[in-house]
Amino acid sequence: MIPLSATGPYRLRVPIVSLTLIAINAAVFLYELALGSDRTLFVYKFGLIPDEITTGREFTRLVTRSGLLDITTPLPTWATLFTAMFLHGDLVHLAATCCTCGSLGATWRVAQGVYLSWPST
Image (cartoon, rainbow, N blue to C red):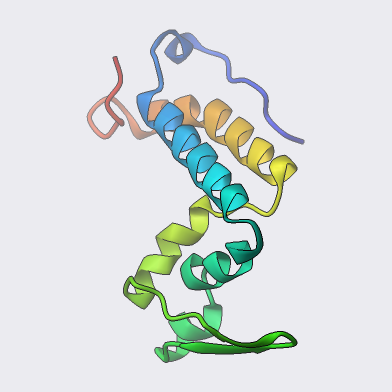
């Protein structure tokens, strides 16, 4: 079930971090769409490849039907743990992520307590 909202007194504050994450997700998705046919290469460069993390080997080339692709990422391999969080396959995937982030962000902020909370206005 996809959570669409949260209840409680903490809903009165503006969830800055949640809104920022939603905006970043949307911006990266729009950038992916603007890439057109280069979108697959972008996903391979900035997406998480589990074998790179578990073995410590960085993949630099990918053999496909259309030829050899250079998938060397400009970031350290460990950074793909974070960049992969902002890649989405389609609009439904993006919408589900944004709904979950928006509704659970405030709940998580309260669960962390006042001193460990994300800043908000």
